[in-house]
Amino acid sequence: RNSEDDLRRLQEQVGELDAAFYYGSIGHPDVASVPLLDFGWRVVLPAAWGDRVKHLSWDEIVAMPWIVAPPVSTLRVLADDLFRARGKAPETRVEADNEAVIRSLVVAGAGVALIREDLAREAVAAGEAVLWSNVRPETTLHFLYQKQRENDPEIRALLDVLHHVWSSAPATL
Image (tube, rainbow, N blue to C red):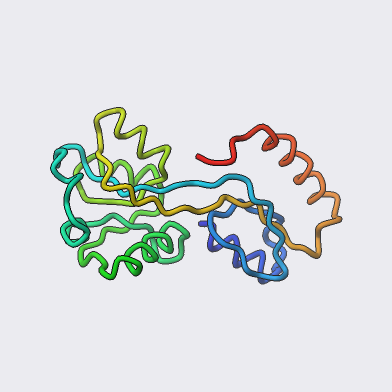
């Protein structure tokens, strides 16, 4: 399961899901959203490729193998938007459906990836990766639920806990 599947389940109102966390934009009239945290994402390359990669052009970066999320994920939408905005997409792609797996593949030298900024900075600090450029797409983490269920006791309880837990969280990572 991924966040796109969760959003679809909430939109279809099939009763399988009460609420979900979701990265990205919400544009469905039947789904309520509580924005929680803004995330930046960075283009990350294996440290073994050296500091020289920091100064490569987009054409050189996109010619390298890329590790991307499956098409039904918010991370893939972010990557595809980045490729579209820069006018060129990678020909060689490896798919992985987990942020930790994507990071591990980058560290192992399998390719370039778009990684959440806090995880990218951890990898750089550990000497496992290098950041390319100051390209920084952003997305927001949301808590979603069906609007028609806003007054249901289960949803009210979830929203109360959510507001308690997230009231002291930073606005951006």
